[in-house]
Image (tube, rainbow, N blue to C red; front, side, top):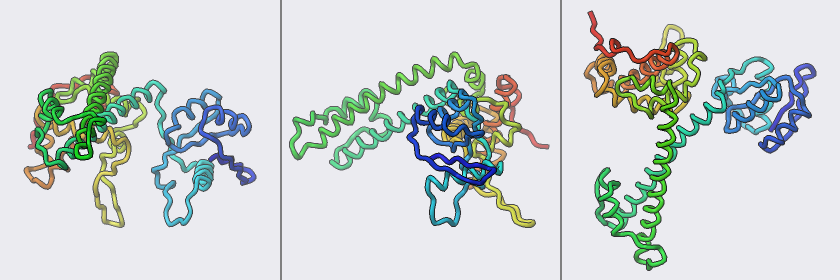
Length: 337
C-alpha cells in the first residue's frame, strides 16, 4: 500500500501495488515523490537501493519508536499505516534506520541462515526423540545419540516407508527424519565452510577473535550486526542497539530500572549472552566482572551475565572503531580500594 501525501494541500492518494521491482519503478516514475518513506520489512534493502539508484531521497522508518505505536485504536489497516507513516515523515517525527550496503546485508543474512539451519536440525532431532518416546523404545541419551555410533543404533529401527505395515509406520517416519537429518548436516557443513572462508578474508572478524573466549561464530555475528562502527556516537548507543540496557520508568523523584529492552538484533543479543557464559572459563576480565556484579548471590547471576554481555559489546565496538586488538591488561581482575 502506497500513500502519496501532499504537504501543501493536505491531500492523499492511495494505490496498491505488488512488491516487485518493476511495479515499484513504475510507481516512482508516475508519482515523482520528493521523499520516499518505507517501513522496515523484508523488502527494505532492495527498495532502499532502488530509490538511491534512481536519485530519490529515501527514509527507512523505525516502526518500534513510540510515535509509531498503535494504542487504543479499533482499526489498523495497511492504508492507516501508510497514511500515518506519511504524516509522521512530514512532521519529521520518524527515526531513520541504518541500511547496510548490499554486500554487508548478504553477509548478515548468511550468518542468520546458519542459525536457521541449526534450528531445523534441533527440530528434527526432537522429532526423532519423540518417535522413540511414543513407542517406549530406548535410544542413546544426550549428544551420544548424534554420534556415528548413535546414528547406527538409531538406524537399526528405521525401515523404508513403503515396507511398513500399520503397526510400524513410525519406522518409516524415522527413516525419513534420519534422511532429512543427514541432508541438514551436509547443508550446515557447506555453510560453515563458506563462513570460514569469508572470516579469513574479513579483518574485523579476525580482530575480535583476539578476545579470549570469542570464536569465529560470535565474531562474525558482532561484525555483521554492528557493520559500520562510526554510525554510533558513543557506547550507550551501542548498548541500546543490542537491547541490553534496562527499561526506565521515571515519575517525579521515582526512577525505577526494569528488565532489558530486548530491542535490536535478537541474533546479536543471543550470541553475546551465550559467549558471556563461555568467557567465564577463558577470560579473566569476564570472570572478574561477573563475580563483582554477582556478589556471590544466586539471584543476581542472570543480571551479572547480561552486564558482561553488554560490556563485551561495548569493548568490541571500541576495538572495531579504533582497529585495535584485545589488550592483555584489560584481562586483569578488577581490584577495588
